[in-house]
Image 1 (spheres, rainbow, N blue to C red):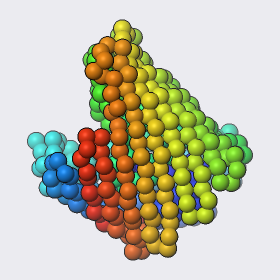
Image 2: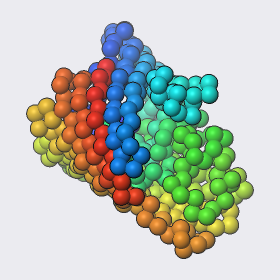
Image 3: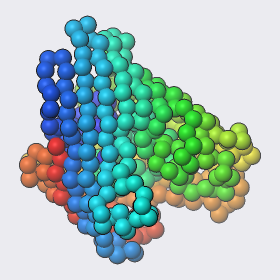
Length: 346
């Protein structure tokens, strides 16, 4: 999935994930860049068969600052579908083939921090769950139900760094996109017998997270988020993580706990994820495992292991911004997915 580079990122991950944006304006006090990618993927699944997709991405970001350290910045970006992908999806009936990604504007003040408004990552993702989000395909199977699995719209975000400590806090205003849409809402893996209608409108959400660089190699992370919905429904999200870098080796682990309450009954999930990456010359090797369990107060049949996923991948960097990718994912249901891709980023 690999949605973002998290705060206190290691040099290994920066080299593996950063795109080379094309500068339109570059001065001492201002910049304007275009960034994006063109990615082709061929997939073979042992259950559903073979398929292919082409996923272009385009965005613009800019910043202006003065001598006192005050800055203003913005970013806007979209994922796009090719004509063939649109015909084979639920967008074929005339829907939009653009999906908004980052859409925000903000101000930064020296020594005070940054204030960002719009659609962005949540503190819970940026400083906790992103630690294991290093894969080109799949990922975050065990933490899929946590707050901030996708970009959160209508979000006010504060971020700052105090020496070795990075902190973020956010408030998300009301959003009515629905519980299973890509809007930072509840994103159930399973409904666990709860009344899903109570989770369709999120009234608001609070999130806070911190990351501390215990040593040059070891980062410790923690986060919390609380969401309120209609009819007294709510959801609590907790997360702990750590990542360690030695030479070209990166290792991370994440634990998440979610508790959902529909106003009458509750369900909870525990997610465990580990991921590792190793750079060798032009190659990057990745592997990871995710395991998640769910407990429901309603019926025993919903007490399940909702995630069991093992991933193994390798990427070859033809150029600094051109990568060939191969990955296999062994899924919860016993199926295997094989991916082959070519990615050009700028």
